[in-house]
Amino acid sequence: MMDKIQYQKAVESKEVLYLIVFKDVFKRIASMEKTTEHRDKTTYWSKRLLNKEYKFIRFSNGYGNDTRPYLITKYKGYEVNDLKNRYELPIDTILELGNYNE
Image 1: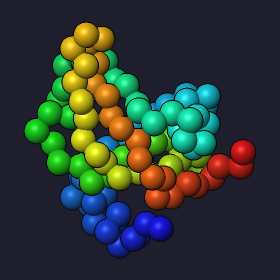
Image 2: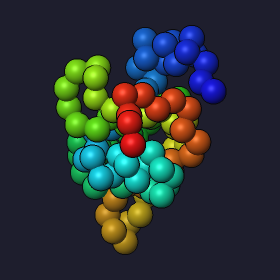
Image 3: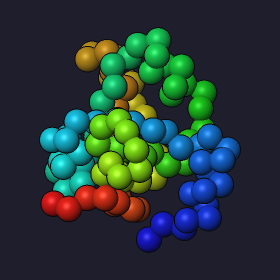
Image 4: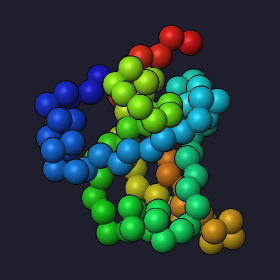
């Protein structure tokens, strides 16, 4: 179970990494079938990941309001896969799953 106060403090101090994913990817993460999220090693993602200290990752299924499905996991850092030129973020225990009816 997630400590809501700890999460809120992380939100306020910008220690939450927000990631938007497609519906099929979200379903695979929610079922723990997918245990690593990949992001291309671009300037955009490098700025968001390098030298940043996150505590949580919040995955959202699409853009929009607070009615979108989301899930929250602990941030476990990332690995750099130079062969595939991407960042790999491990997905661990789901701390909260919201607005999801699958």
